[in-house]
Length: 193
Image 1 (cartoon, rainbow, N blue to C red):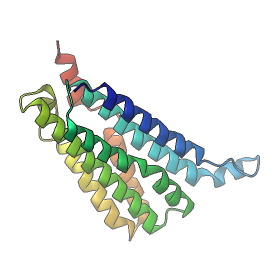
Image 2 (cartoon, rainbow, N blue to C red):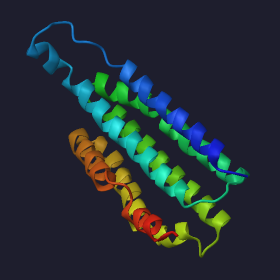
Image 3 (cartoon, rainbow, N blue to C red):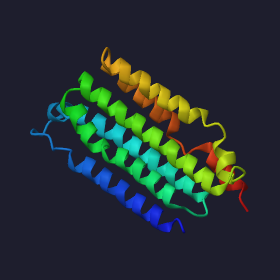
Image 4 (cartoon, helix red, strand yellow):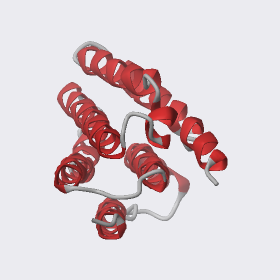
């Protein structure tokens, strides 16, 4: 089957996730910079989550450019990814409203792990569907960056119970690692006729 419906549905769900996150932002009570400063934890959480969801949307988009067709396993793997991404607004709000307390920061990391793991499952299903010699398989290779990201998230979850701020820095570091579209896929797209 074609991939158009999968792409359209995924784009719609991700747009709703971002909309929910932005609607969670509350306008500061005052009109001065001090009032805005009080909102910085919420804005910081929103920014991190926006970038996080945006990275998944961007890489999902690029990955699907290398795919010709999808099957039922791919549809379910994609839904699995969207499930984890749909939890981001909840964890974002809880983390910021708690003042970055240990439990909410750890839960945020758990959602990052779930998202990373489910993205890997989707990627694996796509490669199986397209074949081991497909352009996607060539682009992904051993996926050391993806595996390292999940490992970093697991370390950050453990650190959340000791030093939540360090966990947040790890989350930011992984986001920075993925901020640009995956160059492996970009190279493969340029090589495609």
